[in-house]
Amino acid sequence: MNEEREKEEEAVEKRELIKDGKRLDGRGFEELRPIKIEVGVLKRADGSCYFELGENKVIAAVYGPKEMHPRHAQDAKMAVVKFRYNMAPFSVDDRKRPGPDRRSVEVSKVSREAFEPVIMREFYPKAAIEVYVEILQSDAGTRTAGINAASVALADAGIPMKDLVSSVAVGKIDGQVVLDLNGTEDNHGEADMPIAMVARTNTITLLQMDGHLTAEEFGRGLKLAMGACRQIYELQRAALIERFSSSNSGSKSEKGGNKNGT
Ligand code: CDP
Image 1 (cartoon, rainbow, N blue to C red):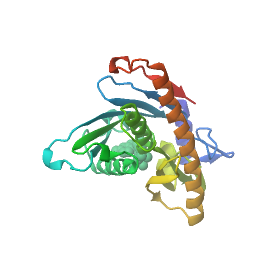
Image 2 (image 1 turned 120 degrees about the vertical axis):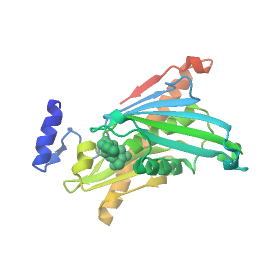
Image 3 (image 1 turned 30 degrees about the vertical axis):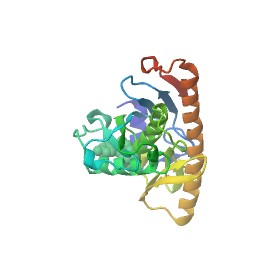
């Protein structure tokens, strides 16, 4: 355990997640963790993205549109979107048993639904669009990081979308509404509320809540999260613009992996 983590654990034992008006990792209440976005990192996927949110490290890969198999699962009018969220065994403190579990099935479902209003599925009848999110390292907020990564990977794959989806969580620690909880805050806090949103139109496409917030805290938290989604949207957009302005032929082998950070 590193020194910083030891100090965090000590403070948590004293039940202090906020000290001198700051959070244990030094952030203000309305501050995001550092974000890094790389586009086109996998040459065999049609679109891909590496996304970091603080200590979370996530890869999204997109395949398709391609013919949907098995055929009986095809939709004659539109593409079927498959979304698989998966945590690597080494991504959590205690080794995670490989393979799907109840939590990953739930996260996959809500993440897929977060994209339903934006992917223009009607362009590709009988097709499948596959989205894979792999969590390499986790520190709370992995579903939001996965959605942000998937959004950029879908755009990198050229899947027609009305707009990007951006995602972040808000929550409550030591009675304070704060943005983007880290692992310690999530474990010892009072509430966690991930949202996803189409930033340009303010359309919420995912909203979950674990714990309890008053109506006033909910309203304040939602506003805070919506503002943060707009910030994330700008970073996603900038990463995509950088990727496409620097790739001249657009061939897969030349996919560079451009970086964008805060
Ligand atoms: O990651 P996210 O906040 O979207 O989902 P969560 O279910 O609220 O999980 C919060 C955190 O708990 C994860 O990011 C992981 O760091 C941790 N976790 C874990 O250590 N082992 C699991 N089997 C699942 C989650």
